[in-house]
Image (cartoon, rainbow, N blue to C red; front, side, top):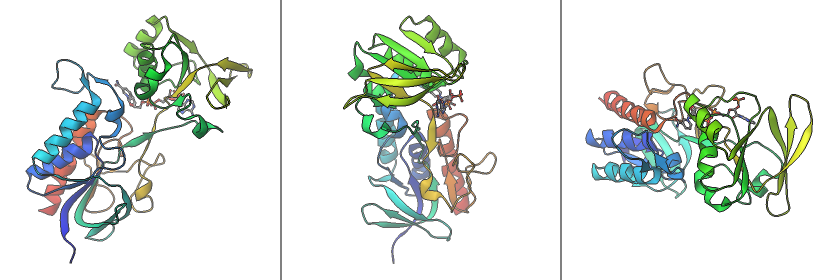
Amino acid sequence: MPEINNVIIIGSGPAGYTAAIYAARANLKPILVSGFQPGGQLTITTDVENYPGYEDPIQGPWLMEQMQKQAVHVGTEIINSQVTEVFLNEDVKKLNLDNGETLSTKTVIISTGAQARWLGLENESKFQGHGLSACATCDGFFFKDKEVAVIGGGNSAAEEALFLTKFVTKVYLIHRRDKLRADKILQDRLKENLKIEFIWNSEVTKLNGNNDLESIDLLNKKDNKTSNLKIDGVFIAIGHDPATNLFKGQLKMDDGGYIITDPDSTKTSIDGVFAAGDVKDKIYRQAVTAAGMGCMAALEVEKYLD
Ligand code: NAP
């Protein structure tokens, strides 16, 4: 008979590791399946200055390494693999992994996070890594003394644009409306930065170049005119999609694909299955809120098993 585990945690961001720390300390012997990007979105950021407990800015990858070590230290087993299929509807849930293993468990905590959204233009995949990126902190360094564009009007776009000014000579911030949704403090920083120029009411309609991206076509939605902008790099910062494909058809989700949980709870539509972090949260999406939800999920698992 295969071993039936108490709890399996899918995903290794702040939600997953926090759930693991609490579950391990409750003697539940959790298993955490880390996925293909261990550490999640914080591994592709640099300075973090809003995670409580640190006077000076810390590095995202370092923070995730610490969480991973803490989870292991208190008794979590980590499997560096990807979950390929889940069967959640029975009392004993089954998870298939890409290493060929099948895990059985009484409860599951889903903390698979979210992924960057792309524009969906022709040639987008061709230019990824050749001038097109969704992560300024990962790729900004490659654009030293060049001109780049950031697409989007939220906090991510604002932060990416500001970060890029450390390397580049110019950043065009291209937004489809004439108003940013980024926080006021970030908007002020953008306006004060002489390297940043706004292009309002505009959408990218085409990516041009041979091997590398050389220019983009823009459509101004106010006057319907098209223009061409020569550019060395483009950073897409238009939000994220929750990583929930694995659970479609089994768990209740909203129109955006976010897992629906009970109010003030991480309980999903299936008994024994809990969801924490960006996979169920489209409002706050912070490391600290994800960690808080991971804690909630582990406590709810403990209560459910009792
Ligand atoms: P977001 O807030 O959803 O903003 C996405 C932006 O991209 C919006 O301005 C949107 O335009 C634009 N957009 C969406 N689809 C587009 C498309 N197909 N073409 C062109 N533009 C498109 O996403 P985010 O900036 O990634 O932030 C996500 C969440 O994380 C937010 O809650 C944010 O506050 C949070 N966050 C916080 C921090 C921080 O506190 N330091 C940093 C980063 C992110 P419209 O405005 O027209 O909709």
